[in-house]
Amino acid sequence: MNKKIVILGAGISGLAAAYWLNKDGYDVTVLEKKAEVGGSMESVVEKGYMFDRGPNSGLETTPLIGQLIDGLNLRDQLVYANKEGNKRYILRDNNLYPLPMSPPAFIKTKLFSTGAKLRLFAEPFIGRSNDGYYQSIAEFVKRRLGKEFLDYAINPFVAGVYAGNPEELSVKSAFPKLYALEEKYGGLIIGSVKSMRERKKRAEKSKQSARMFSFIDGMQTLPKAIAASLGNNVITSAEVTGIKKTQNSYSVLYNNSGTEKEIECDVIYSTLPAYFAADLFKPFDDGLEKHLKEIYYPPVLVVYLVYNKTVIKQALDGFGFLIPAKEKKSFLGAIWSSVIFPNRAEGDTASFTLFIGGARNPEIGNIDKEILFKKVRGEFEQLMGISADPVHFFYRYWPKSIPQYNIGYIEHEKYIEEFEAKNPGIVLGGNYRGGISVGDCIKNSEIITNKIKELCVSAS
Ligand SMILES: Cc1cc2nc3c(=O)[nH]c(=O)nc-3n(C[C@H](O)[C@H](O)[C@H](O)COP(=O)(O)OP(=O)(O)OC[C@H]3O[C@@H](n4cnc5c(N)ncnc54)[C@H](O)[C@@H]3O)c2cc1C
Image (cartoon, rainbow, N blue to C red; front, side):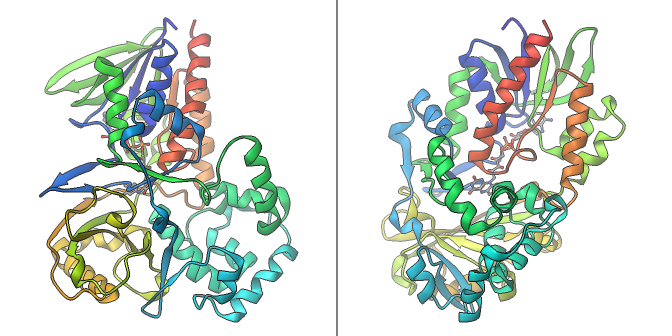
């Protein structure tokens, strides 16, 4: 415990790890480049409207989330999605169909053809595959569940989670639990039943059954509260510019509001995006840069729209909708923000968050954002039966949004593990390892914390 730990980056990965370490009495400092903490978790108020520019919600998949919320006294600010949040629409032939959530709803739905429904009965009889890391989620789903299920369930789902392309994402790297159903139990249907029993024993929730949460003032509430609890141990406006190996430890160089500073430490935990970590750790290893820079972060434009409810024909009774690539629209989907959480709209208005681009349409990086915005707005208004201009709109462009665990990702993962073994005291992490969701980043923080504690012992 007398060892010094420096964490690079004050997104949820870095802050959650710092919280557990600090709680256990470790000396930990977090360095953050921006003036505010939170990383991708950005909640802003513009013209009286609260807008989450990054994640709009998290899934309570681990008891660690509840422990953080209680430890930080955030219960009174926590909000769970209301019951409408369970209804999700998928676009097909310009119509919004609710995603069926029960066997009777599945039998009745017009989202899938009769052929696609019957095809599911073959799933338990399809054998295992043996190349999960090098198999795309598209191939996996087509083989097990059929093409239509890929196009109208998995393709939009992948866009909603990763802003990703199912033809490129590795099933085992990006969806390890889904692949494990086949690998461990031989199929998705049998595996779902068996793994549900196992999760119950571990008090964990699957992503399908976990409750969706946020906070009255948006998702950034959580990182802000963690940082407040850590006080001076979090330094903002502190851009890490270099790492040096000293005799028995490391020295982290950073620029704090124009002043060059340095901290000696025994353990460094980097949660910087892979492309930044690539430059920082280059002097330690010739091959690491290439691996980290190959992890692809596609661009995403997030648009927030507010309309008077009276001009919207579509019933506002769901989480929102996702758009399959086959439907050839200019955006990935829309969250009906004010329907699911309180404090997302004023008076008689409703607010919506739209996602554009991702690995499906990376060319948005080269398109004028005003032109793109107008096109998307037109399509959205047509689908929702909206007959007037928005009361307000804002947008946030992420040139590099979410890391893609694409085919070949396992090579990067193996190289990073070897790098860590050769450089004891350096831990690389953040959302490009162990899952991209807020819930996964929090779940990983416990694993990382234990790893850091072991490194502290071996540094003694
Ligand atoms: C648009 C968008 C929508 C999303 N929606 C959801 C959602 O609805 N639900 C969900 O669960 N997940 C969602 N995610 C994913 C999730 O938000 C992220 O994966 C997660 O927040 C990443 O946390 P992190 O701490 O690993 O990384 P980051 O949040 O990226 O934090 C890294 C930090 O490092 C800092 N940094 C960078 N360089 C330096 C440097 N040189 N020195 C010091 N600091 C530096 C950055 O400023 C940043 O604060 C979304 C992500 C995006 C971008």
